[in-house]
Length: 333
Ligand code: CP
Image (cartoon, rainbow, N blue to C red):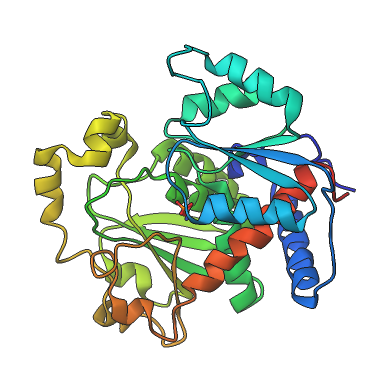
């Protein structure tokens, strides 16, 4: 019996290692049920309010599909659907309190962390982080599930998380969530990124503490070579540091010209190519959470190679979200 019913998932930080393993176990069970064509309508008649402040291909579609397969329904809510911040001047509190009376859970993709924290504070129903600048827990669950499928246990596995150049400037949420996963589950995470692009060091400190017990480790290095050597998985992602992100949305999404110009100098050396993969073991798998900027972060040749498992990873967003929803909404006990 799990004690996850009614809980929020604001981040990997909220779950113990046992709760993460339970969620992954339920993900595998639900994936099997779906592959066997066995109905698993654990959330019959339940509604998920999916609030998306940005575009989303994988997260929005996988959450919506998850609710359908579980016998429930997701309502997609973006800024055009709600009054919040619009002419009616409805505030976030009243929006969330209203949704709380209709829906059974909220999945929230938030441009900034505070509205997610506030939604969790106001709502009596579970609030799930569908990506915010601090964490992207749902992606981290899918990544770990995918790695376990390919390798069995990932305790002591080596995962190289390689920063790749792209013009867009997303936050370091996934990097932060993967550092927490490494600390809790006991795998080796080596983050290769240029100076000035480090993820959240407070989160790293917390993850380091957990790693001392789990046997995991988290290191930040400045070269692909050090990261990919002996790696079981090479995952590519692009992010900016929390300090750069905090400078403001206009700056980080559209790109302050000075910052973009400086960043452009990294383009030639921070792309995962076949040559980079040549420094990794031959059976090393390639991952990317997507969307990817092809031939900027990582080449087509690498993404289309037999080592690439990017679409298995995308598929597992569905299965892990079904487990998260079922456990938090009380469909699976
Ligand atoms: N990986 C991920 O979160 O993708 P979307 O932005 O398309 O949801």
